[in-house]
Image (tube, rainbow, N blue to C red; front, top):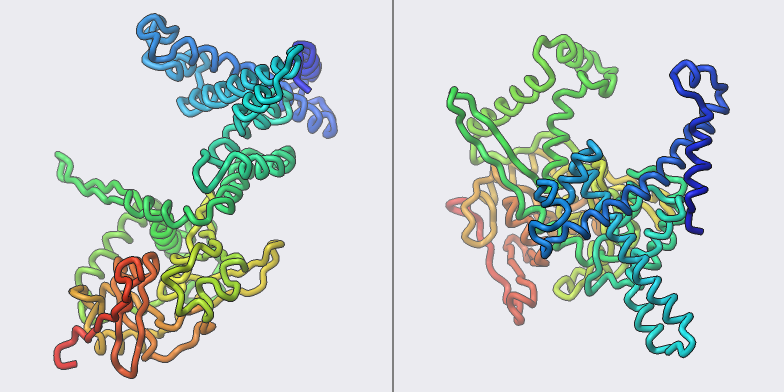
Length: 488
């Protein structure tokens, strides 16, 4: 039911009766404090709704086609968001949020009024009514919830942004069904929880698109290093979620004693933690020094040696759907990888924003990166906790380095130090156990390519062959992968 001016007055009057100073609020009983916080939240939702309505009007009266006669331009602003930010004293993000939600509400209200007019018309045409109904935005239930005061503007924007836009895979009907259940749960969740839930629902609706979004995130990566005028050097970079979580894991392990990390029982580790806590350097300085030290270690490393020490782990939560027979990651699908479709997806644990990973990424991570797979069923119950100890030991990886001489991919010249151990027998399918002969060294880019583009490596005795996907070669003629080590 749409709120009225009386609802707003009732809400603000209730807040006014709480008091007008900190002393008044301090005098409230615990039950009154909790009730008062809810009353303030209800009043704020009603006020924010009106703020969004007003933002939509400002945006409409400042639309680009009006040029300098637009409202924002008349006031000396380049955009309606800039005008709103100045008037409200809010952040740029809050101004954009008000415009986005307000515009969504205005569009939904206008479309629903057309439907009502068509239905109430004396000579109402069912075909015309159906046409107007089809034009009602799928976000209309979000707009109604905000108007009714049951959903905040912040939560509405989280749902709108989390569920995304329509495309060939995610239709208005599918989004509408997901939205129906989401709005029921949103009433008891905070804004961050609402956004995470919306993102998870979108990923479930568009699992086939996860791999494409992963590739885009990987393509967006960069690292810029520049020397400033005073001789200092500045780093600025962007990493895909998978690599970013690994970077964070490394620096978390270096600085965790400073941030209330794990308490060590082992005397040597406890002594190390005490040294970190007592270190006169700031946490940021410790992190900077650790990066330099890591680069020195890499620069001085033997290029013929495969790194096999224990790595910081990146946890991936894998749904049971991704592991069902006949789907990727199972023996039944081993001979049909060129035609397989997305079976499910996993999620990188630890990120405040839900980060989905495709089946291909799950397979690759479980190959070599020390990733722990945590399998859950459709109800959220844990059914298996994978190992965080990699299959291949340091000795095995060193042996592979001698045998392979580097990345075995065709025409790749990466040394063993820059490779990862790929499991020819899939890690999940073989339960993490296989022989040294069933491992092969691939550099990170080619390891990515193999899993994401569904190439296959086959072993016959001591010989290894690369089988391309049918999209690359319809005949799938195998390609020999000889050792890069001279004399082998």
